[in-house]
Length: 471
Ligand code: FAD
Ligand code: SF4
Image (cartoon, rainbow, N blue to C red; front, side, top):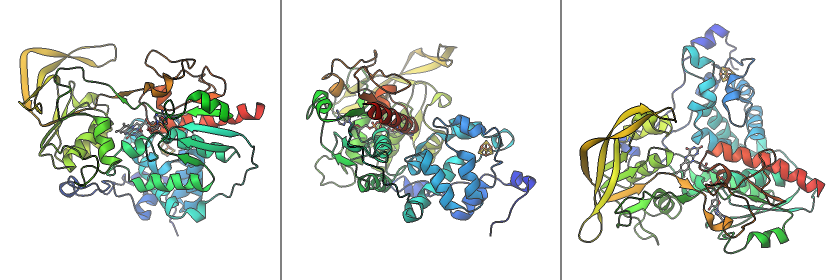
């Protein structure tokens, strides 16, 4: 029996801390760092929520999830109801509970944050979603929609594609996903490491889709194996959700030396192909002792923490601005510091210097200082004359971001793109310049977030459904 608390008692409750693995131990293995709340602490945290009338937290969520409602059910111990609310709003709550930047979204707007700390919405989402994964039969909704006989194809099996597949299949359409890689999940599998997002969660979500009849074909590169025109002939509608996986280059001398990798290559080899953990894999990876990761976003943090786990003595973030401007999640920065990651701020790479055998040996850097505020509202870094430093390295990882991969779009010249190579859509419907061809997620937005990709998948599935009904 859960004790009802007065407002005063609820206000007195302190934010629950997330239990974490010991940094000394976890920095040498790939186990999940955040261990999750137990039921007692989750319910206590849920009791901190004031169920505010104006639902400020909802305004901070890119997909307007029913946050006070699911937390309200949890606070009363109604886990089935809480899980159903979450599942209605989000296709992948166990993923979002782990990787969404809540501190700049829902939690940044939470009213409890004004006088103390915001309600730990992300921890609660994760708790309820994990509970639901373990109690699937209790939350399963038996839906047997009338089959429409319409065939939809989805290009790409990341969060946008997976979400759209679920939504379309529950409306009775026949859904096929074509995925270029040999496994599902997109960035969730090949990009985000196991210590932040266990692959088991993606496996369960994908299995759920297959159970309801979604067909998934891996190793199909649309634009190479099949063209968009071929898909248009065979299917009634197409959803392009192939992400933005093309690495941006550093464009500095020495980029082609051995030991210099893109973040995508490094993370894909480790996460998708098991390199690094086993010497006998088909695509092993160079395990650096002194690893420099260039960049300051989530991808850079994932790379540097992975390098540390692979045995690097010095695993460094090289960033031309300061910690205050780092785009990575605060939690990742905090975890990285605890794991012994070095942050080399106000430092901009000029050149990678190789040894006689063309292996990277030094990263030559320009030291910077912050100048005037620029158009982005941040103080612009500027070079300090003659302040040059050579940092010893054996591996350099470029984590400067990614762009749209032109593999598909270059084979479909009628598809309208913007100047960055992203697919242009009607923002209301998600439809591209080609009738019946829709797009969403990173291929439209450029590198964004999981929740935005999922939101696109959900909204566009609704548009595709309307399109098919009218067809
Ligand atoms: P993707 O996840 O990129 O999936 C696209 C899929 O399409 C891929 O599987 C790809 O192989 C496939 N594909 C590509 N081309 C073709 C083709 N021609 N034919 C068939 N299939 C194709 N966001 C967060 O919210 N929080 C985080 O903590 C976070 N961390 C991140 C860490 C890393 C390392 C990276 C790279 C990104 C991170 N992001 C994070 C961003 C987030 O993962 C993406 O915004 C999101 O995955 C985009 O989803 P998507 O479905 O549009 O594309
Ligand atoms: Fe609860 Fe905070 Fe949302 Fe108010 S703003 S309903 S306290 S989570």
